[in-house]
Amino acid sequence: KQWYQRRVAITAGRFKVHKEERNVWRMYMELRKFQEAEKYADGDQAKLFEIASEEGDYYFEQKYYEDAAQTYALSHRSFEEIALKFINEGTTAALMNFLRTKLDSIGNSNNPTQICMLVVWIVEIYLSEISSLEKQQQSSEEKSDKLQSTRADLRNFLSNEFVIRNIKKNKPIIKVIQEMMASYGDTSDMIYFADLMEDIEKVIMHHIHDQQYTSALDTLRKRRSPDLFYKYTPTLMKYIPRNTVDILEQFGRSLDPKRLLPSFIHCKTTDQKEQALRYLQFVVFSTKCKDEAIHNFLLSLVVQQDDEGLLLDFLDKTDANVDKKYRLRLCVDTTA
Picture 1 (cartoon, rainbow, N blue to C red):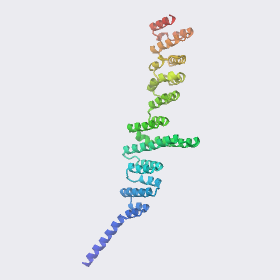
Picture 2 (picture 1 turned 135 degrees about the vertical axis):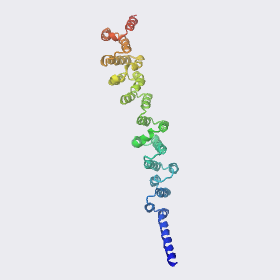
Picture 3 (picture 1 turned 60 degrees about the horizontal axis):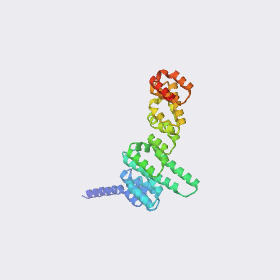
Picture 4 (picture 1 turned 180 degrees about the horizontal axis):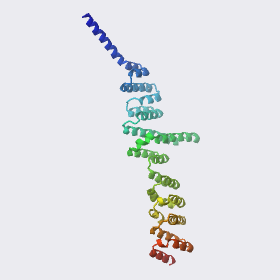
């Protein structure tokens, strides 16, 4: 019986010690010895999350906001709750630190909604800071350096492969970011973002709206989209006809000249008509286009030049491709 009682006592003692060891991590956490607490957590994620939460609270109470941001990001506390804590303290830098670290910690998890929400928060902070810098009354050089640095940080963030991959899957988030940029009047970053999202038409429209026609044409040239050429060439021919025809000639046979005809029908100024004539001559004589509509319209432009030699040369080279009745009617109207 004595042996049995002793055996039970020893077993109970071992069980008690074992139970105490399992809670050593909590004891250290409550003593705010967080590294020791992590050591005794033995890799248990639930314990590590709790330790990170407690450690973040400690740093926050001590006003070590940057350390708190880094630590909170490793906990399972909702990012809305933590973000609000930093907002109430007016610590924008720590808030940004928390959001960026939280985004990195999520990684390639199956939580695209949270990823997109974090991205929106981060972009909002950047846009707010850019707007604030633009309004500040400080020396132009100091303001310019800080503004350029913040804008560069925003663009580096937006162009991050992980960010782009997740945003592109969520069109409503793309719209939210575009609307935020519009609300801040940040046209340059809106164009940059649209380009990242391959929303080329929005980029072109912004350039045209700002009367930056050369930039719009350059965007068309880089993207090499025939449909966009057909849509925007009429506008570009109105304002920069020579540059537009230069690019059209570079694309040669990859563009259908018949679909570009509406771009030339409304040409009114001498320069516009001369450039339309130049392009259609290129199409007929260099790309060997045989389309009757192209030849007929080119003839109408040649007749308007009041150059008999040019007219005779054109008729000699293209006689078979011009509608005879149209040619006769055009000549009669011209001499009337």
